[in-house]
Image 1 (tube, rainbow, N blue to C red):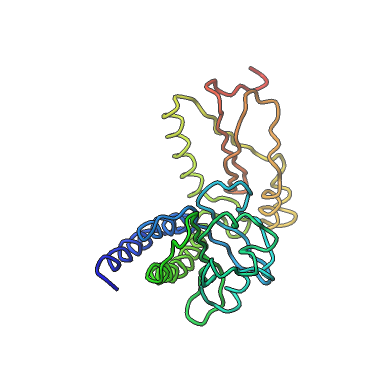
Image 2 (image 1 turned 30 degrees about the horizontal axis):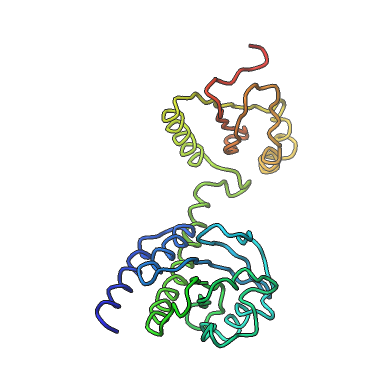
Length: 271
């Protein structure tokens, strides 16, 4: 591989290595591909049993794709998962199967590569789709570099999922699944900064549950915490549009943070 090509791959891998969460890996994958070649669309679709679901698409499409599921059978993506190899070999060969089952959206792209995302002998758990409107966009050397990027994307996605899971665990109560004090502090700080930027007030509403001690004394604290987590936010009579941001349970008391979307402060019915 010539020096220029090596530099392109190095730049792409460097971009990927700086990402942490899943969303940042998706965006870094697009940037990494862009270090190698100009393309019109990059997408990542996850595999689950006999179906696949689009998790990320780099641009708005005429047909909504994100979070839609499709069958693997009778599609190029299905063949890529089955044979663990990059397809199609050549767009000019007139491949029979569509890229996605029962979806002709990709027909307008003259150059398409579907690359399996897997580690060593592990099953393929996602595919990388790279598409360009121009013909013969992916030369052999370019395909090799994209495969190198795809191998790194597979590793980074696995690490990113673990990172996001750990991060979520630090922000949620393990018993109720409700945001904990750390999440509350972060949300409060974020909303304060938002209010300062927009020069608009916000309201923090603390809600107490009447006679909740009887539930704890009768059924125990674990049951009480689970019960409080299931109580829906039911504050009515507040003027002005509001946004539910986060639910927090601390010492069996639910806290809800509300942020107004207007410049006027919230008013209670008694005002």
